[in-house]
Image (cartoon, rainbow, N blue to C red):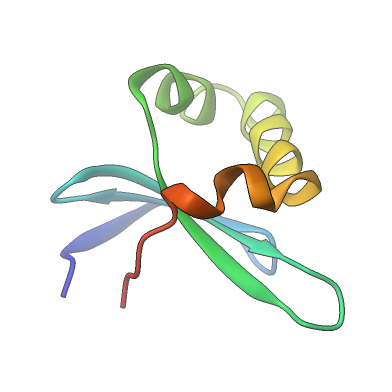
Length: 78
């Protein structure tokens, strides 16, 4: 089980975690079939996500608009 704590969260959109492996962005994707992608962030992505809310939402929109680009990076978290 991955040890983590919530840094930022918006219901039905995203959760940004600080975890033992580094920052992880969990994004809710899909329409009728909802799923989450849990993406360990690069230092540049974390700088964007940990900045202002607009920058974080831009990253979330990028993931939700092209989840197939991020699916291979997704990890399982509990």
